[in-house]
Length: 300
RNA sequence: GGCGGGAUAGCUCAGUCGGUAGAGCAGGGGACUGAAAAUCCCUGUGUCGCCAGUUCGAUUCUGGCUCCUGCCA
Picture: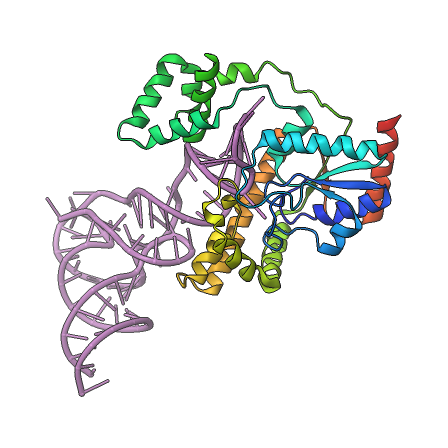
């Protein structure tokens, strides 16, 4: 794992080639078909050379969430194991990776109820009514989430279904790794990562990202349940609609990407401290050697 | 050249009926268990363009200067 533009894809490809591995993408956006340039997927040749899982699996209008991701990834891991290969998980969606490695608590979900609550939130007084309901029924979660619409709604959803606080239900499982893993976080010096992001953004734009975005927007990506959240496409849409010029578009994408990277860095630092930080850049030979050792220790 | 408008946080700008100033964005920190490349929370001292005058006190009023900018020539 690692922040965006940290070199995960290229490292995963090399390790897979050297250790008979197959790659499972832990990326909430690379799972969608069509967003090839914008999500910096491996090239077609690379995808052909090394088997990949959870890439180009969904159409953009399909809905993805952690729960589904974990199911799909577990299936992929079993599948890879059954063929005697090594599963290599590579991606920047920390939330998904943590959920896969540690498992999710078995919380109920009801998308219908959730969207009802969400709609209620928009009604005049709806927000206050829902907050008041939480304040009375589930004060702990109210305290925790009253500032955060999405979290409040999810807490309310779980409370409605179970009569219990989501926070309470979440602490039932102690975090414990479900697989033996070697987990690395690719770290860069701040300014260096910023530079890499800026450089990669311009390369992606030159490689045809704008055309890709134009067609994705025509296919309605901005109205999809999950894929609309992908970074960059909306900004490119503003450029295509002549609301901003090329340079502004470019800078805004770079800024947004950097903000994403910062959130990822915080996540990996705070939420997955079991992960070993690998200070980049580092020669592949060194990484290969270290991986080999860890692998030996792990299977012993 | 004439008549206006402006000069305040890295950027765009508010504001102070005279008591040394605040928003958005950027930047920094944090959260995160079914939308996560998303969402949310915390975080703002800067010669208030320069020089003088009035005043107990000026970034705020007055005069001059410099630099932008608009209209007319």
